[in-house]
Image 1 (cartoon, rainbow, N blue to C red):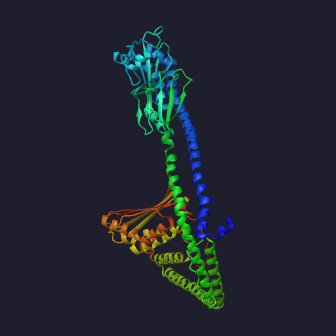
Image 2: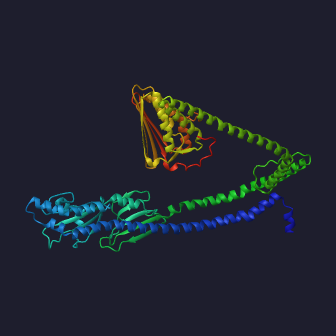
Image 3: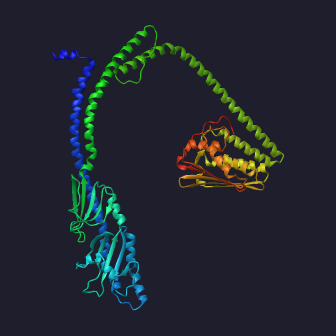
Length: 588
């Protein structure tokens, strides 16, 4: 009977029933159980983490105090210091000599221990003069709280004292039974270091440094506020629900009875978890109402999409290969529509492929023949031009015009190199050879008005750079700088490595540029224009931008009448490996 009743339910109602019984109720129960278990586990984990952080801070704070106590112990056993404080000096030179003998002791404590801010010895020996580390033990010092706190103590061990000014280690350096004078050692801990220890601690609560009388001597709140004001531990205000933990110091006399006390606000550490309790209620409502609406929409979409597929199947009979609208659905109906579309595309392609394949094959053969023809032409033209330049050069040599012959040779070398370079990257050696050929041509052009100097780190000769990176700057310096210069022009080129950069510097003593012209040039370089076919500064800048992004720098300095200086920095680590040489289409 139940099965018969189920069969009469609409698909929409079946989906809602399945969702409520199998999804909604289990999800609500799971959320409740998960919330309780998560709350307990987070509380336990927070407690363990806090105890671990407190133990680490306990150890680090104890180590800082131990460093100060260790210095105090070194001072107390140092015989030279004891002699210096209790001696009667016959002359000032004798006192200075004694002070120099203990200077190393003070320097050691100042340099080696960053946990200490100052070390001071107070002495009532009238023969001891005040200095950086030794001061008079006068009546003002005897009326201080720290001095009074040390009087009831009969031993000469280090004593820990905390007041509103900071944390100190005090120790008597004299015994009235054996010494005629009284000496006190006062070591101030570096409170910036102490504050940093507490600030960097991962303890998520309030921390207290407690003395043996259960008095709070130093505290750091959760918000980072710090206090050195004494307060009773029993009168401390605690949260309604809290977790506290306390670690005592046991292994040293000066820290015996002191402890580190931490308080965790349970509401604070569990606030995020408890907020999720409100979401469970809302989630229960959403998981019931929203899916119900969605199920109704899904049931309608199933019917409409199945009907749409059936309509397109009937159209195939009339040779109408129209695909079913497909919006990347991943359910079974979407897969059905996708496979149907693939089927009709395959049928249509099988009909058309025979004709299309024949046409494409003929077009490919025509393009291959055209490419072969262009390759043969490109072999003839450069070879003919090189032979013509060589004929002119030999004719100039026969006539004794060696300078003209050398210029023609440099022109041929530049033209041959620009054509034969089939690689995107070339070595700096090849670039420099091309630059030297160009400058020799310019020297011929300016008839002795141009000189140049190239300084190069030999270790960089085989380093690869984008081809024609430096040449456009040399061309710009000779044509625009030296041409308008009255007198002998001088161009210097320097290439070296600084750290991870290859630095190229070119300077000339030409006409220079005004500040407005420099700004105009820099703005022109940064504009997003297409790369022109001419090899100019703009062309180089865009190519370097493509190769290195923002890892290269370009700086230009120029003043009218004082020349121009350009500095280019390229990242050496970003240089490409050498590319294999392609077969040349002609002989040089």
